[in-house]
Amino acid sequence: MDINQEIHNAHEIIKNGGIILYPTDTVWGIGCDATNPVAVAKIYQLKQRAETQSMICLMNGEKMMYNVFKDIPEVAWQILDISEKPTTLILDNPRNVAPNLIAPDKTLGIRIVKDPFCFKLLERMKKPLVSTSANISGQPTPIAFKDINPEIIKGVDYVVNLHREKIGGKPSTIIKLTNDSQVKVIRK
Image 1 (tube, rainbow, N blue to C red):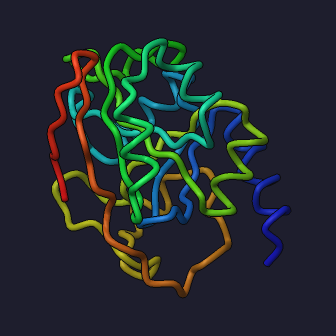
Image 2 (cartoon, one colour):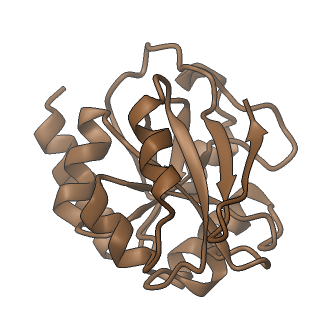
């Protein structure tokens, strides 16, 4: 299994508006180009999820974050610096992403990834990658590839051939930050 080949394969699908099933730094995710509303809608449809239940985006660093958020509260960087486990930040007023990714309260959840596959795929895409757990809405989050519902596997355009045996970690911690510096932990 060649990580570079998998990055290439996944990128080809994503840039043509497809959706992928891929391993992340937490659990298996379903993803697409976060700037493509049609691809985003395909994921909602596959998960049988209402578009009001927002999904998060993976990013690979500061530059990508500033492309999506004009104002990032200082505390966001402090949280990212001290977090030992994957942490999702929900921030105000995203831009340059598909409108159907943005929550009704004008926020977007994002996570900076260190996982080599996700990180390199993001470098290649130069855009955020949608990430949502690989389950039908309301069903338990699968922690291993073997636990993923066959409907999900059939419903994506490409399944990344890495870490199929690995048991995933827990879903990320979720912290909501507002531009007026309110901090609220949503999931520990």
